[in-house]
Image (cartoon, rainbow, N blue to C red):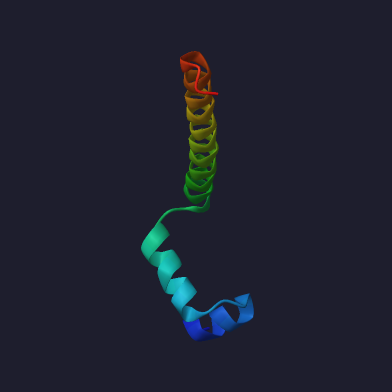
Length: 67
């Protein structure tokens, strides 16, 4: 089966396959899954940090009496 046929069977474009190959290279499935989980965890941590920074700024304004 050619890559074009495989892409049609999977319902993806050849550009998507090329992008996945560039991104994941020769990673096996478990390593790719772990990478995805780490990226999701990192996104959650960034969101929590952003929320904490907003809370800090609000408390700083209250402490200065600018509220």
